[in-house]
Amino acid sequence: MCGIIGYVGKRSALPVLLAGLGRLEYRGYDSSGVAVGEGKGIRIVRAAGNLLRLKEKLAAEGPPEGTWGIGHTRWATHGEPSVSNAHPQRSGDGLVAIVHNGIIENAGALRKELSAAGYVFASDTDTESAALLLHSLYRALGDPIASFVAFGRRVEGSFAIAAMFSDRPHEVYGIRRDSPLIAGERDTECFLASDIPALLPYTRRVCYPEENGIVRLDRDGLHFFDRDGCACECPSVSVSWDAEEAQKDGYRHFMRKEMEEQPRVVRDTFLSCSEEACPLTEEEICSLDQILITACGSAYHAGLSAREILEQLVHIPVRVEIASEFRYRMPLCSSRALVIVISQSGETADSLAALRLAKERGFKTLALVNVRGSTMAREAERVVYTRAGPEIAVATTKAYSAQLMAMYVLALHFARVRGCLQGDDLPLTQAARELSFGISRCLQGEEQMQRIAQQIYQLHDIFLVGRGLDHTVCMEGALKLKEVGYLHAEAYAAGELKHGTLSLIERGTPVIGVVTQPRLACKTAGNLAEVKSRGARVVVITTQEEAVFAAADEIVRLPRVHPLFAASLAVIPLQLLAYHVGVLKGLDVDRPRNLAKSVTVE
Ligand code: AGP
Image (tube, rainbow, N blue to C red):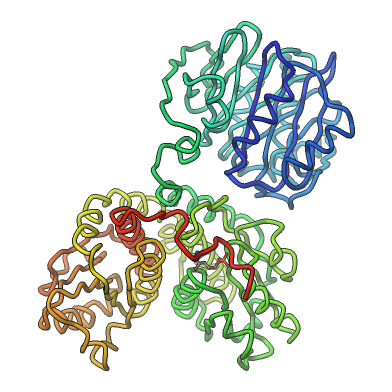
């Protein structure tokens, strides 16, 4: 998620812009920049890396003195982290400069249209398409508000934009759709930002422009317009949060905030992975006779879920290896295998070593990462990006869900290319597209998971059992309970219980059964009856709406979903359970003891 700041007032804009970007650093970024009005022009300074790099550049070039400007910290989605891809993006004549947070879904079509009209692009970003479209509209219409109205009607996707026009001194404009943008004022100063922390030092009264709403900041204050360009009111609201609370958007922890972001993140990942060209050619996809997935932790669990989907849809053998094992074992696999490395950070030492080993052995490699410009993104021959945005909590939630979605899209594409989808694959694609709605509904089941957390948080052992895809979800749920609840949670293939583990079940032992696969439901129900008869307290998490589970003391009912994608829903109550166990135990769920967000050491 990028950071945006805008200012119009009586002071030098630069210090306000830099201080505002500093308060948005927590969102994660890989480059930054500012645009400041100066006389009849706009001065733009950008730098890759952190804000220190930008400040050094400003000091070297001499800071701009203007009293109006915009600033940006960029989390790369389209185009690598670089100065040319940093914001502000501008028109070639310097008339328009914009900063943007979101995804312009029709950027490609706009780029073609604008190039045909003679525009020359200087970056790989979707934002530049927006900047040049705004320029063309402003040149045609001559009025900023009318230009933004036309802009909103032409652009598809999500955006929060702050913009300046060199022939409009002491004015900054904003427009938003889906992405957050807030405005505030104090005395004769006006502020615009993508997030509350940037405004808190100046004002605690903020305005939230409506969907597709437009705002102008000038020396008379804030002026709001609706999507048709009609002036409208935008009531201010008082913010009581402190800076840290504001960074969490009012949630108590980043982990809880990031869980809530999963519907949007999954939708964005579906859209971007569906629209971006697959990094393998059709010939390469058809030549594959094996896929090997390697990763660590939750990314490994995402790989286990992906195996089920790939084997069922693409009909080729898939192996999943823990990267720290793979790198010392390098299992034999076919020369026509594809090695997929999954990693949120793109920096995990074991996964990076596994990638390098696979490359050394001559295998096709593909990195599925969340961070553009990360080491794995740069070293893999092929890259697929998730759109989770920066993930602050050590325990991954939204990045894991995005990894699942990216693998669904890849598997569907492979299956289409290899002719494995009999007839129309639209129902499957539609089911994947609609997952974000199911995830939203699962998040609404928080109260039940809070209650179950109350029942187990003081216990020491808990078992999670399932078969097939359900077992992979149990593994992720168990890891969450360990990571943030410090609870010894064991994930078990339900059919394995009777081969030893059943001896651990005694009166009151909590067992969670995950049941989302219709063809395995009866078997797992039988295993749950086995533990129930030995005194276990059984909770069932299921998408089987009508199913009766005689052994269940409690049932967590999830929305119906295609079984292949059920892991995306079943993991949500387990994330909520782990989170509330940690909260009840008074633990730091965002920064659990002994753990790091990215394990860059062996
Ligand atoms: C997951 O909650 C953990 N933070 C951890 O298992 C993580 O998934 C693992 O370290 C892999 O990290 P990566 O995805 O950045 O490679």
